[in-house]
Length: 114
Length: 118
Image (cartoon, rainbow over all chains, first blue to last red; front, side, top):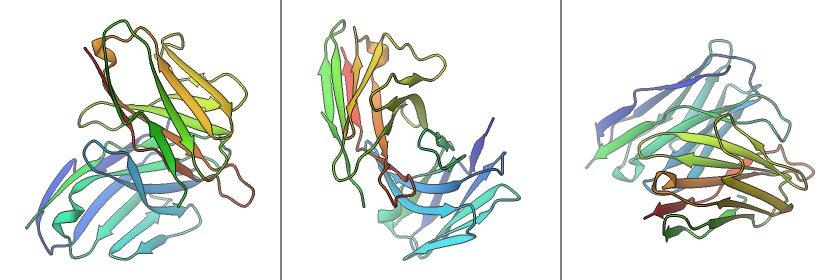
């Protein structure tokens, strides 16, 4: 059974610092891995999706890497801003078929202090 | 990106009543939708997989008679919480998987519905 772990569970940094969020998964047979952002009381916003054949994806200040063999992904957020404060979730998908279910990590709550 | 809507965004009801939550994919077709439940400061817990035109598949421990799911069209799934009780109060999130040709079956999430049962 796939298990996804996110460490740390919470993180507080001063504005301007780079953020490093970790995600690990136990079964390396994945189809893709996705990083989401969730603001309090809101739904999930997809940030980056990395296919199993890819090693990284970038969007603006965000960069996500994937090392499938070691079961790890890292989300980097450069030059953090107070608006980056949110909970970040990673999720892995086992296969392409429509019925394949995402397995979520517990999330990392991020606070960026002005 | 693709948009998934949920209605209502929040609802307060009395204990014993039933509440229906709608999940719509606005600009794509979804043969598969998922219903999640989220408790405060916790991650998402998958409740069931909703399949268009067939019965939903429920996760272990989720009562199918209490959480009725109907996926009558390629753009709409509904979750009905029957005979709601205070312990059913939670944040319910749906997601829809793009089943269109050329898509990679990416999954998109709705904004969630906050249910409070008095």
